[in-house]
Amino acid sequence: MANIEKRLMGASAITATDGTIADVDIDGLVRRLLLFDKYVLVSVKLLEFPHLLKHLGYAGLRDLLSANLIEVRCECAQIAQVAQSGLAGNKILPPYTYKFNWIDAQDKQWYLEENLRGIREAPGLDGKQAEVLAEKITGTIRPLPPDIRLQVCPTFFSEIQNGPILNASIRMAIERELGSVDFPLKLSLHQIDEDTFRVQNDIAAIAGITTGRAHRIVEAGIMGVAGLSQTIKEMELYSALSGFRDEDLPLFRKKLAFLYDVASSQKKEHEFQRVITLADLPGYSSESGNMNIEKLLKVRDSSEAREFRDWLASCGDAEEKEIRERVAGLRTRAGLKVGGTTGKSIRFLATSLTGLAPVPGIGLVAGVLDQALDKILPRSGVAAFVNELYPSIFKRR
Image (cartoon, rainbow, N blue to C red):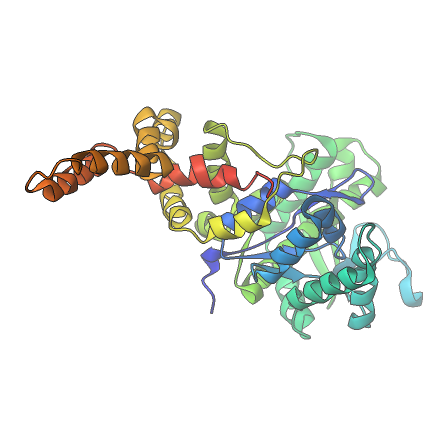
């Protein structure tokens, strides 16, 4: 089984207010590729890839897909609330009654081909290039097992009967809909059938809202539990941490408080961004298209990147001054110069000058000088990553 701490499952799509996919978070993508061995991209119908093509170009996207760093989750499988839908001639149930069903694509191959249309019809690609990218995207897709419903639904039905979890999720839904409120939440859940539940509550009366609005708030809270149940199961199936959205984290903490720091990528990504911000380093610019995939692939496998990841895990309590000194202090920068190209030139010049005269033992003197330079001005892999390697990702070829 893969090491879960080295794999991340999360989304990179940027969603517009109307629900469409407006762009891709390139800086977040770079961060995740640098921090984790594998990124499981939770895709929205593969709509991220035309945007990635726009930012990275054909060669960049092709190289990224070829590097075996990304797996793709492309599924529509999920729990749905259908009590008021009237689907398949079912009776429409009254407010506060919730019936759940599992929805999925009946024809997975057709679903995949439909989702690939975005990349096949992307402007700027010829037919051959489009097919190359479509084939590579298909090769990265890792489907869920056929029995995923049997793995998720029983867990969900058990979870919504967990009073503290359901109460916490519904309270979160209330705050998203009504803002910060402070009133006692009285809920009582009753199972009517195997997949049908009724939730008695007094939200409408206390908050002064309509029954319909209160019904939707309770539904949103229940579906939050459904999403949590499915995410935790998929973390197991994909052997990956989850890049939970900020609004989902409180419920995750409630469910798995003792595992939160390990089972969520947020802390690691936050510390990474804090270091990058303190060092005042460049990021992705859509105007200049300054993303260099070739350099990214080299940087992530470097010894400096490994040293940086190890250091990052231990710097959570470090003060800003300490971090600045480690990544950008005068001593650090001098060490970079001696260890880098400039430093090599200094060493070459020093040893060359000592070799101008045939003085006995001069080789020993040169060796001592070389060791002294290393001791006085050490090269830090952390500082090298931050000051040299990371910025090189954002320079065009």
